Length: 143
Image (cartoon, rainbow, N blue to C red; front, side, top):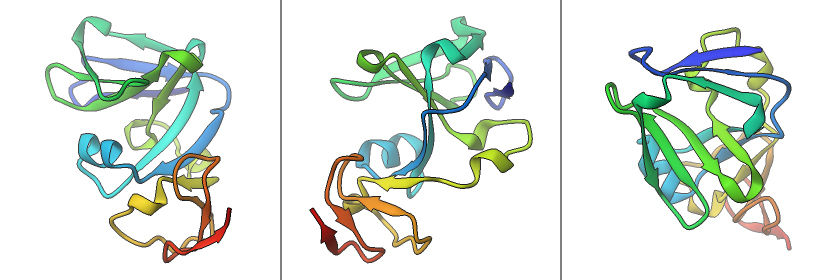
C-alpha cells in the first residue's frame, strides 16, 4: 500500500497492488493541466485507489474519455479518471512513501507532442501505446 495526499492534506489516498502501467505522457492535455513538460503517470484499477476527502475534489472533464480531479483548496492535480477502462491515474510526484518502485518507467506516450527530448532509452510511442515507435529525437523507427 502506498499513501499520498494533496499539498494541504484535504484529500488523501492510498493505492494497493501494482499499477497497470508506469509511463510518461507528453500529450498537450497532460502538459497543460500539470504545468510541466510531461506527466509521469501510474495507471490503477479504480478499485485499487481509496480516496478520503472526496468532498474537497473538483472535477474537470478534460476530454471525451477522461476527467481530472484536483483539490478545491490547494489546487493540487490528483487524479485522472477514465470510466470506460475503470481506471484512475495518479502521479508518483504526490506520494509520501518511498518512490523507488515507481522510478523505472516502461514507456513514453504521445512523444510526438513532446516539449523536450528525453534520452532514457525507453520505448517511445508517437501517440498511445499502440502508435508508431519513435527514437529519442522523435523520428519514426517502426510502424
